[in-house]
Length: 594
Image (tube, rainbow, N blue to C red; front, side, top):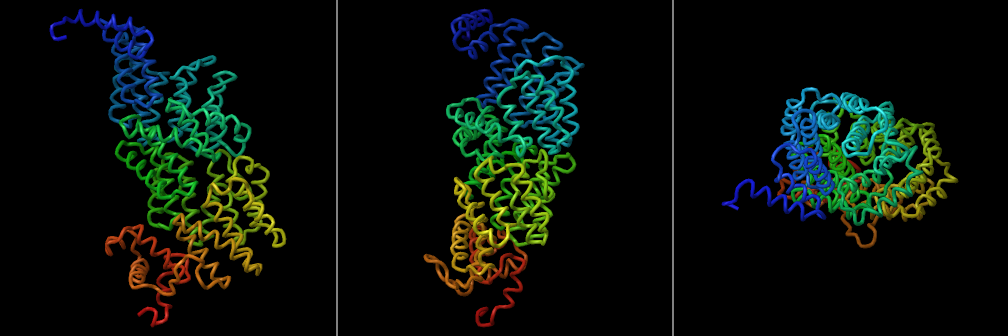
């Protein structure tokens, strides 16, 4: 090799390319090395290599292939287009905003008139939303680039990626008026658009109204992921499964995508996979795993520059913090989501912050605050259009409305849930729909409706939601003086909440259980009639306003250990929140405080 001439090496590459006809990716690279000047055919072959590499999660290789294709292009439009393609591949996969901006600048230098360049529009839209841009500007940019093309589109990668980006922008906006531009562009793909885009439109944009007819198709697509090597398709189908509660079926393929990202592959794909895996673990009750995965995703967002993806990961993590009673972390994360979302017109992210607020308030027993948060996502009596998170606050809104004396609003929302037929979408939604109906029912019919809710096939796959319905049932039975039956449901709910580490809900349930006259703990539990010295110290620090982390640092304990102690402390003091700690400690008899 050292003694060979450039001509010798090019001939060798040409010979290897002729031999590798059955390996198009390797063949394209050898042809590129054999080229002596611009070669459009070889450049086109390298472009196809790039898209295949992206599907396999190799973002770095894909960008390198497109850049080499640009080098082999004639100066002007062709080179400019490929530089813009490298920019949007980089924007989608690597998060390197500086490099993306530099590639776009090079594309404009090669051809100053980039008007109508879909790759440039996609790259710029990503830069806008990961920077200081807003949803409406990004949508106008993409729609304008797409509309310049007339007639029916082909289904090439560039067009499909542009439509996927437009879909993402419309989803981020969370407003019905954004979607006609996407629907018009999608219709131009012909009567049978790509399955992934079609499923996304039906299951994410407005699942309340459009998901049910495509559930069988979605389930088939999920089964087909078993041996799927295309990471992009895995993420698309997994996204389509999110609001239909079928995401658990995508677990193994998502693990493959996350693993590839950890090994140096597509970072954005890895973040998306980790976000979905965190939701799977949250729904199924593996909350420690869910927290660990969400934290990994957040760290990747922060180190790689992906604020657009970060709000979704923060939402997953904040929901866990709220459910576990870590009020400080939940509020910090939700506040960060809101601060990012409002100036960008990202209504979906604003709804996510309200979702966190609703869960936090319900756990603390602040039903007025819970109502305001849930109603901000979906007004009572209406399942908000093109706001999929409306499906996640169905029972939250109904419970909060009843607890705050808004019986008419609660009944109206139950009617909207029934009319929309959301129970047909998934067992979890069937459980929540039936539970909501039981909450507003008259005393005579409530037990039967609660029994029907708890008998929902598959409801046990969603332990937190199941325990919440059991808690509500137990509370209703206690108020109806059906003490024995009440204890059974409250004890079952308490067991689940304890296992999950849902401390506010543990305290709330334990308080209800004590009100039934069950003074002793259930079998297998230790009786702790008074605070230990360490528990009292923790309680006093928490009453003084210290966070779990701050208490742990002072007492040389982990924040989880502090949380576990507080979950034991609250029931002993007969309270459900940190806010009540100070009064409860002062009200203790002197001999117990000593």
